[in-house]
Image (cartoon, rainbow over all chains, first blue to last red; front, side, top):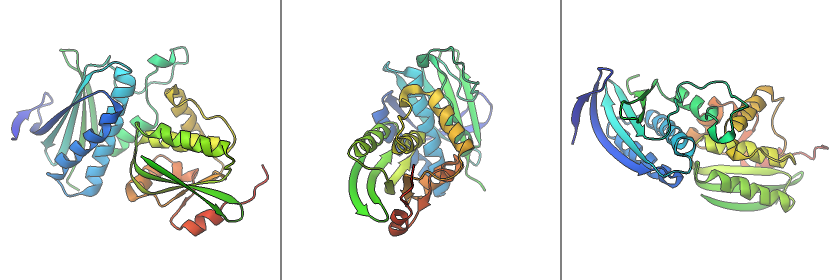
Length: 151
Length: 143
């Protein structure tokens, strides 16, 4: 069932499907298939679908490995249809880090608190058209990935 | 992820490690462990057959980088080192003087090839589409 909504940026999004997973790397494959199927219902552009699935995998890996670390947590993956675009919202309650702002590494910060960056975030940026992060008032992280479907 | 190995003889002995499945954060450590075992058993030239790898994330790139380091006879960075590992990988790509001599790649699928391309890994790991050409590309280099 499609649910119409406007997100807080004021652009039109038709919610397609939502999946909730626990923060385990063994759940990445399930998440990828979910995004792939939802995206395929909106576009037959294999490159667009592939880019989005990979970008979402990178984002989820960061949340699981660096966000929640060893703690169990819930991650919500919502796929929505935007204006000539696929939109994926990832919501979690891990201690916040904003992957859209990757600072220079601080060698005095212990490894467990190092902010992830490097290849994964670089790939997310290259593979998506827009990347937005916000901390919600309820204390959740929300990362939005936008991939245009129109050429 | 399924891992199978094969030994062939070209100019030098070459081990072909064939990976099957998806290379992500849940499987990349197995690839590094597999390569480490091969090195300990005497492998000095490794060809990674990626024909059946349907997905690869940046975890896979960390695995490739670690395996390249192993094949040079060096200890790879702890994959849990996070940022410092990523920084080191990026640095290696920027300062690379050419292809790795002891690790080469065979037949990545288009999506995987795209990832190797956009991250600069194609500048350090030579990619082949033909198995024969790949194994004969390993030379007896005096290190």
